[in-house]
Amino acid sequence: MRPLVFAGNWKMNVGPVEAREYLRAFFAAGEIPHERSVWFFPPTVSIEAVAQGIAGHRNVQAGAQDIYWEAKGAFTGATSGALAKQAGARLTLIGHSERRHVFGETDEQTGKKVTAALAADLQPVLCVGETLEQREAGDTLAVVTRQLAAALGGRDGKTRVTIAYEPVWAIGTGRNATPKDAAEVHQAIRGWLKKQAVTAAPYVILYGGSVNLKNAAELLAEHELDGVLVGGASLDPRAWAQLVRTPAA
Ligand code: 13P
Image 1 (cartoon, rainbow, N blue to C red):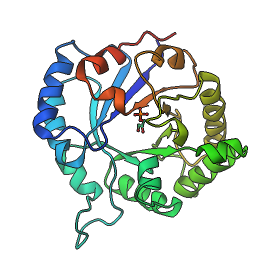
Image 2 (image 1 turned 180 degrees about the vertical axis):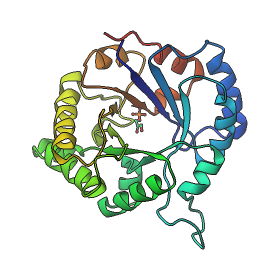
Image 3 (image 1 turned 120 degrees about the horizontal axis):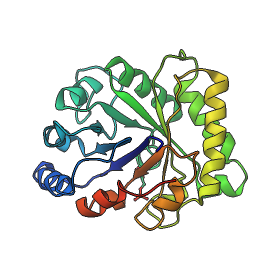
Image 4 (image 1 turned 180 degrees about the horizontal axis):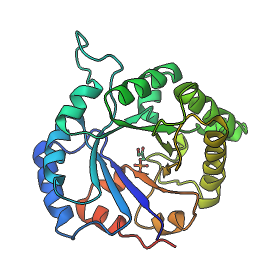
């Protein structure tokens, strides 16, 4: 079986008390299948509870949903990479579509956050993806490569970064990309990473956008997908335990 990543982005849901209950229910289903990794991205206030709740479980990591690029100081409300790390994060999402579209994060800022994550020894999970308007205009690959270049351009080939392709039109809409649509973009991303040599192989590329128990098997049958980044369908611990056990070819 090829290795697969199942990443759950809880967004602004699941506080620390709920996170402890969630993990008890999740692990009641047993250990994570061999060759699979499960990454949880809880809200910042729940990172420590998740880190404690997953301790001792194989192939399970906690991550932050976002970090600020400054290392410390007078930045009310922000969380640095070092603070997230101290709470138990090993990874961080960067440039999630909601950060870009709800909070106005720019391509340039995602680059600063990737630098900050690497400095804090957090593995960045860089999110890229086009809006519906951009897809319909035929700009998908141009947008995605612009986002990659802004965040990763000029780094050396030893940098470890995971990419999550999340088309904006597929997030929380119930409308997922077809396996073929996703594979086409993943292939372009992989080609760009190889050519630019700004990150280390193996290139891990996740798909996100309305992944659920019904469509996960079909998506994961596509070998361009190294895993999934899931919002809504990661919020129920029993359904998530089932999703991470999706049979994949
Ligand atoms: P949904 O799975 O709810 O569409 O969210 C996807 C996402 O944004 C994960 O980061």
